[in-house]
Image (cartoon, rainbow over all chains, first blue to last red; front, side, top):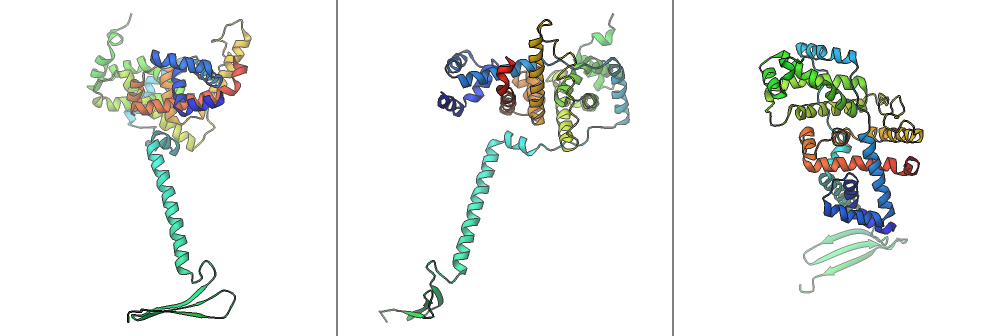
Length: 174
Length: 196
């Protein structure tokens, strides 16, 4: 049943469950969800929590002005208008969390770009180390490489020895 | 008996206020001040801030009257101004002093009994617990999500009205509302057995 619940969640069912609990689904969809909720205890529990939240919110008491606040309200508004004073300062930029949530595609694209940049940077570092070092993966150190028209000479030194090996590559056609 | 000012509809009063009639604007303020204050309070959940936001909303409205085209009602237009100011207020508060949250109305002095059956203390306790958990959940929501939730669940606005009030797309409204509802659901779910 837990697997079934996860499958529902993966298919965007979480969103539909919330809409189902708020009674915002068209009848056909509602009937289908009713079947799902009936068969899935975890989904049912979620729906109950959604419904409790909605009922709780709708039951929150309204806030009203006290008599003195109500009496002083308009004079204060007029005073502010006359003074041309704005208590609410400049608009504040939205937080990162809201930007990320409101623009999921942009966030995903940014994350992918960051990952690609990281991989690229890592690979370029590895390549740089490979080029700058003279010792190969097996410890053989290349002393020198001379490339000429007729022949190329490479001098290298195996690990753990002072012996130097010279390879000459000749062009057999000359 | 109400005078001619009180009987005039919002559109007429807005028209006169746009032409500089302060008396007409005063009537609009008195007509909407309770609703505006309540909306501001539900978002910022602090009386002092809510009062400031509500008054500032009318100051902004007065300054912006020439740009009010009348496509939406004055109430919807005010919703937009209040919500934006309330969101800004919350963001400023989160960056400054986050400890100014006022929970008095979320858990009222009567312990929530006004909503529960008077002879059912168990139900009253449950209501109080739900409100307390909801208050914590609402407090943890980002300001913009909180505003959308309040407009939908408390003010009863449609998705389209919320989109107009908040100034975002319908998809963003749905997304924010789902996020907010899921957050509250997650807060309540572990305590569901105690609350039922």
